[in-house]
Length: 132
Image 1 (cartoon, rainbow, N blue to C red):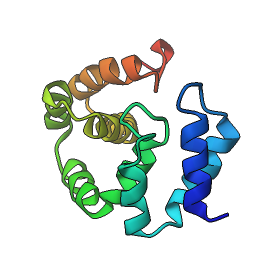
Image 2 (tube, rainbow, N blue to C red):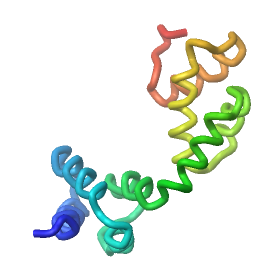
Image 3 (tube, rainbow, N blue to C red):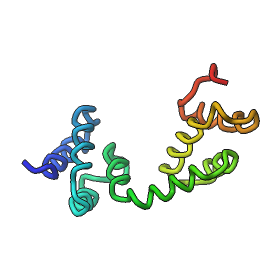
């Protein structure tokens, strides 16, 4: 059975019930080995949608170059501008990456920056109230 067939089988199987974590990780690994054409085929499958647990991995693989440009831009942005961007963006990808960048910078932030970042990181569950 080809990798794409295994992924399709899992997509169909887990369309109406929650994913088994082992199968999800296996499918993520299989996606990373697929060609761009196969990834596009999976993306346009009737069993794939934005709510699927496999979608974020597929999205990142399909738009790897474009997303890397976004991540580089976010890394070059000041902390206060990141907080503002987090509050105004509708992109779930950007929100996820901004929270990771804020967590990486958290220990080296000034007090005002830390206070603003703390709220975001606490909501995301990346830090606890004890980390203040």
